[in-house]
Length: 344
Length: 133
Ligand code: HEM
Image 1 (tube, rainbow over the protein chains, first blue to last red):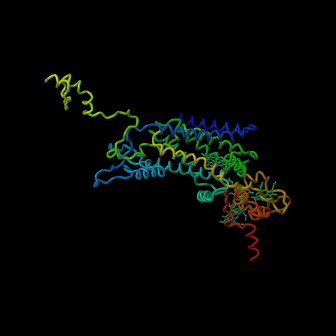
Image 2 (image 1 turned 120 degrees about the horizontal axis):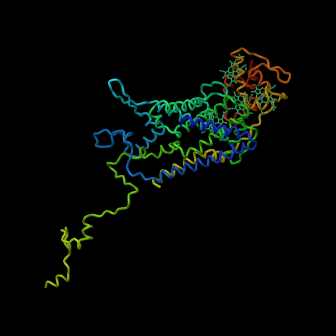
Image 3 (image 1 turned 120 degrees about the vertical axis):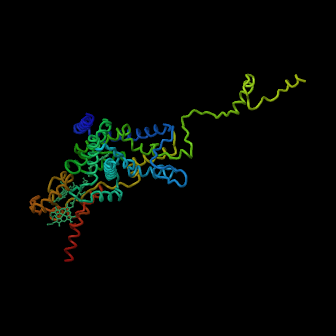
C-alpha cells in the first residue's frame, strides 16, 4: 500500500502540472514562480537543517570502528577503518562519499541446510546505489547547458562521453538509462528483500517514484514527445530564470511543465526528507570522528560545568566543622592565638 | 553551534555550488539569441512547418537515415514545386547552404554537437572537394 500511495501521489502531481499548465497564464506559475519558490525552500530548508544538526551535541565519541585501532607499534593499525589522524578521517570520508564504501560491506546472513549460517557481503545495494547516484549527478551537470550561457567547454566533453554510443538522434545518453535502471533497481530491492520491505515507509518509496517520474518525463521530452519542445526557446527561459529576467517566448509543451513541476516538488521536499543524507553523510559523527579515544578524552559538550573539587580543598573548606564533630582530618587546625593565651 | 569552522565553510561552498549558474551568467557575456540564416536561395518553405522543424528536425533526420539506409526508401521530396532527394546533404543542405550560418547558430547556443559531419560533408567542404577533383 505504501508504494501504491507513492505512485498515486506522483500521478496526482503530474495531473496538476499537465492540466494546470494548459490554463492561459499558468505557464508563468509553473515555469517561473514555482521554480523560484522551490529553490528558496530548498536552500533555506537545507541550511536550516544543517545548522540544526550543527547545534546538536555529540555526547560520546561514536565513530564506527571497523578495524584495529591505533595501539602499540607492533600491532598493525587499520588506518581507514579506525582513523586516528585528521588525514585518515579525510581519506575515510572521501572514500565513503565518492565510492560508498560502507555499502560494499552490507553483510547478509543466510541459513543453509545443516543448519549452517553464513555471512556474506551483498554487493547489490552498492552496485544499484552507484549506478543511481552517478547517473543522477551526470544528468544534473549536463542540464547546466540549459542554464549557462555560453556553455563551458567541459560540459560538451561530458555530453560526448555520455552519448558515446551514438544511438539515434538526439543521441541517447547512458546516464538516462542508468537513472531509470537505478530507480527501478532500488525500488525493487525494497519490494523484494523481505526485511527491507518490512522497514520501508512511504517516505522511502516516494522519492524513488518521484525521481523515476522526473527521469521518465525528461526522456519522453527529449526522445519521444517533441511537439512544442524547442530547446532554444527553453534555454532562453532557463537562462532568464538564473539572470532574474525570465521570459516565456513561444508556447512550450505540457511535458516540459510536468518535468519542471516534479523537479520543483523534489527541491521543496528535499530538506524535509531522507534525501538530506546528502548533507548527512558529511555530518555523521560515526564517520567523521577520530578513533582516538584512548589518546584523547572526548568531553560531552552538554555536561554541566563542574569545577573539580579535591579532597584537600574539601577539607580546607570544612575543617573546622569536621574537627568540631570529631571527624579525623589530614591537616590539623592551625593553633588558635587566644586559646594559647588562655593556657598561659 | 558546534564545529563551526567546518560547517559554515561547508554550507558556503554548498550555496555557491547550487547558485553557480547565477555567478557564471553574471560574469560572462551572454551570446546573442541564435538567428539562423534563412535559405539564401530564396526558398520559402521547409520540408515541414518551421515550428515543427525547430522542435524535431533531429528526429526527422534519424527517420530519414533509417528509411534510406535500412529500408531503401530513396524517395524524392517535393518542396515548393522543386524536387530533392531524401537525405542530409541532398535535401537540407541544398536550401540551408551554410552549416555555419544555419545549423551551428542554434547548436552552439545549446551546446549540441551533431557527429554527422564526421562523415557527411558540409556544403563548404563539398565545394572544396569538387574544386580539387
Ligand atoms: C533533479 C533535477 C533533474 C533531473 C534528475 C532531470 C532529469 C532529466 C532527464 C533524465 C532528462 C533526459 C535527457 C537528459 O538526460 O539530458 C531530462 C531532460 C530535460 N530536462 Fe531535466 N531533470 C532535472 C531538472 C531539470 C530542470 C530544472 C529543467 C528546467 C529547465 C529541466 C529541463 C529539461 C529539458 C528541457 C530536457 C530535454 C533536454 C533535451 O531535449 O535535450 N530539467 N531531464
